[in-house]
Image 1 (cartoon, rainbow, N blue to C red):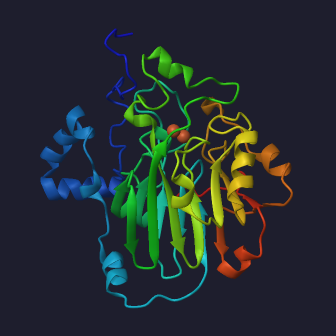
Image 2 (image 1 turned 90 degrees about the vertical axis):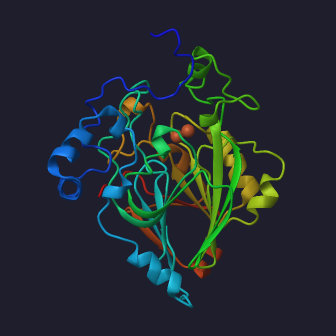
Amino acid sequence: MDEKRNNLKPARLDGRRDDLAPGLSRRSFFRAAGAAGVGSAASLLGSASAQAQSTDWLQPGNNNHVIGLQNAGTFPDGEVKIDFYGHCAIKITSPGGASVLFDPWRDDPSGAWGLWFKQKFPETLVDITMSTHTHFDHDAIDRPQSTMVLDRMAGTFEFADLRITGYADKHACVAPGWYPWTDALAEFGVDACPPNNPGHMDMVTYVVETGGIRTLIWGDNRPDPADGFWEAVGRIDVLTLPVDGSEHILSYDQANALVARIQPKAVIPTHYLSEATTYTLSTLQPADAWVQEQKSFSMLEGASLTLAAADVQGMDKEFLYFGHNALTE
Ligand SMILES: [Fe+2]
Ligand SMILES: [Fe+2]
């Protein structure tokens, strides 16, 4: 290995691997060819430097839906829709129809962490795409067809009937399970843990408020966040937590302690092996065993869920588990 490679910045090991991949469907390729001339578009696509750039300018569609929401004076009461795209990728759609997708995934572009996912993240249509941190399994922000991208946003954002607050904290930095993935960072010469962690071990955790429901997107945050975190997040109705049988990010004990502290009405497991999206090579395992040890749980039969605030208020730490159900297009 190159001796200068003492950090985990992505390296392009095989320039051919991403040919036509980042956001370039066949349809959008021909749109690009039409816009830029076939010859110049083809030569752009053959260039490694061009491949590293955003391809969002090639997205089909436009911002008409966002403009409609922007101009709407009022929004209806109603249910909140939750769609699961596997791993930590969750789309929340407000009663007014505004949608936000968190943490679209991809494989590690350096190849160092191997093949995790069975397909490219779907080019799903959404108003807002957000990412909690820059790890490959959370940061394919160019893949959704999205009018807005808010990457690692701290502070508060309001749009239509959505209010989203980001709180900057740190990634879990000690692997609790059998696979000591955090040791790899020491092998690359960096401290995984704060205060001298590399930027890719920074995290933003989000609270989404819509339809009378407050959802906490935990991402890969550490189990013991900084002082101020708990006042910042406040009451949480729906808690997402990264738990799988290998205890890759959080152990069962750490996650159970968080559930006991937060007292959510509902819990949605994330970051586990879903047969629809994720390879065994990820070293992740399903979350079934953790879910089945809970007092109350539902094995969901699909990848989508609608929640009404009144129903959620009647729940008590109800585990809503998507299992192997995930949207792949
Ligand atoms: Fe991560
Ligand atoms: Fe992750």
